[in-house]
Image 1 (cartoon, rainbow, N blue to C red):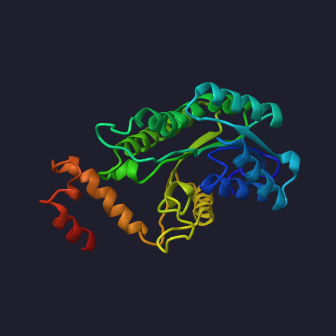
Image 2 (cartoon, rainbow, N blue to C red):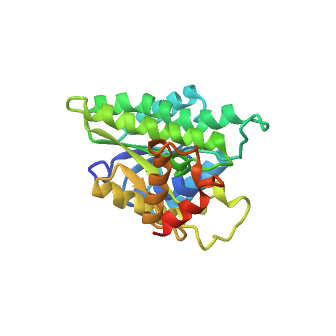
Length: 280
């Protein structure tokens, strides 16, 4: 197991009141770690905390902090709260996100909010926590939740795609920077879930679709990949296996290398060649 994932160590998780964030908190609590749950909605946080305690965690080992990750001041308060409670932070999981839908000309007027939460919430979170984690001298792990849509950027939700593409670029740059700091023991990972049944994707549906993984399956894959040393944690699901993901990613990169039209996978002149290439 990664040295940060040890009994008594402390983790801060944003977007922790439900879905993947809550599943990650439950996973780490079972290891005996102390957890700071961050999200919006005090009632939701209280319910999440109660679930974790009911599963066997000590009340003193699970704290909550209502946090809007789109507000840098709130992230600073989150860091101060976690350090005051635990003395240190070993794991930061920048997981909070939103996907209300978007259009290229922002008819919904929500681009600023999507980018503030999905991208700058991750960037500012790492910028606020990482220096303190490095200064502490202990092993540290920063997990940033990205998306396959930030890599293959399918049409239909440009603001979300842009925000998650930014998370990918930032996390790569963060890991490069961390590994070049002498004596630093803090690392970064890019977490790329597949289709997961969470409140973000359910759109009011309570029953898990057959193609989706549960948050618990996804979190198990996450921490198994971390133990293996992976940086890019590319999760499959019940619809898409890893080989299909790999070929979709390679095709997207090929648009530049082969000078095809952007998003050629959805272009009428290239849609059929893509399908044949995918099946080959």
